[in-house]
Amino acid sequence: MRERLIRPLSQAAALERLGSVSLGRLVFSYQALPDIRPVNHLLDNGQVIVRSHIGAAVVSAVDGLVTVVAYEADDIDPVTHLGWSVIVRGSAELVKEPGEIARYQRLLRPWGSRQLDYVIRIKPAIITGIELVSHEAAAS
Amino acid sequence: MRERLIRPLSQAAALERLGSVSLGRLVFSYQALPDIRPVNHLLDNGQVIVRSHIGAAVVSAVDGLVTVVAYEADDIDPVTHLGWSVIVRGSAELVKEPGEIARYQRLLRPWGSRQLDYVIRIKPAIITGIELVSHEAAAS
Image (tube, rainbow over all chains, first blue to last red; front, side, top):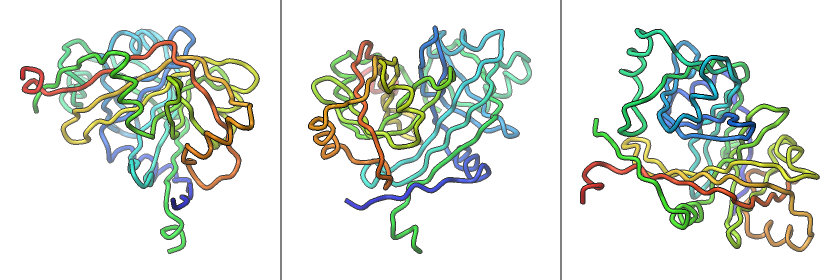
């Protein structure tokens, strides 16, 4: 097994990777416990927009007040374990304006066939990312 | 775009899926904020074992006391968005017994080339999983 190197990504590179995929994971506290939901996302003006209709856990944690969440996306090869992971931390709030909701609903693919969902906007405060590269790639 | 159906997995099916992959994400609270780290895992006697050396955030949240965490793994096609996701919630603790640590270190691939790491054992209290299937597959 070859060893891999962990290299940090710049904020710009991390956001670019995040924007290159549509699946990620929303990480939040619910009833004081850490929880997670896979969701779809898009980047809009540097903010992470997600739709969620997987139960009320995410939404009730966010509705009516600003909540701190983390958002993670990655693309890591299951065999070589090479790839990248990006984590965004910031405040999340429900998008309330009907025009914005409609626009995001057009742009964001729903997770399943359930009708009820919400649009959540995450304003990144901290953006970190790593890439996992082979020693050979690191040396070249 | 075809709609997908979300179908729950049984606990047994969810654990089986989790055991079929080696990458997942440890979800925890750190300084009262939700956080996440991609890690490698293995299932041992129904418990989720992970090695972590990505900073002290995970370990200090766990060291010395039992902490509730979530663990998520998924395998979702980036194009069709079909696949599955499993979430385990339970208590996490550091493995302290040197023989156990040595055994897990042999079995578990390290995440990167850093030397210092810890072995964390998650005892599942709640196991949930979903699969995302097409309407055609659901009807067949």
